[in-house]
Length: 258
Image (cartoon, rainbow, N blue to C red; front, side, top):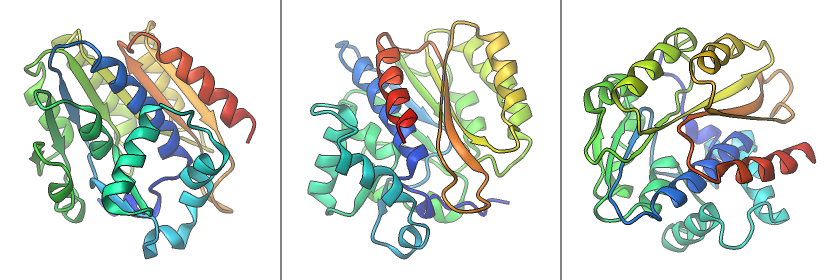
């Protein structure tokens, strides 16, 4: 339990998919001159080193963000490209931001950020890189349930577990129902892996039945190495920001051409 460490997978194709959508959604939300709340249930660390032993061991970043930048998958002005360029200017050319640091770059001084992380090694890592965030060393589902509806009420919750806890597939639909009932104006975004055994299907079926107007976006890609179970990346978004479907269509074209 709690053996997953994202440093081995930072910047991979799933990260690119997730972070391109996250940045696009936050970019839209911050256009309105009213403060917002941003919450994450599984924050990980704020910053990763793609030249580190973990990343070079798997090579997943080379097939993900490195290829994306080389081939121009992010057009000029894309919020993820802006965040990545700024963060590499501060931390070096091999830096890759986790979702908390991407959010911190896009949010404004009067926005609120609450980050939960239960993994002991990961929980120690965000603090130096996420100034102004409230860090919670606890179960992220407990944190979100306690804080929602947040103040300010506008905002977004990112649910991004590793799914090493297999019961997450069963409990997440009920959790999202509870949060949406309490926070009906919040954007609730769930990232999940597409696995060769299709274990995500029942979870997404349940969510789609309860939230028929939500955004569902999935992309496929080849396994990172022989025998690797992840064959794609998915995002399910309740109350998606206006215009995000243009970004999903763009990403679908990119991944279809891989």
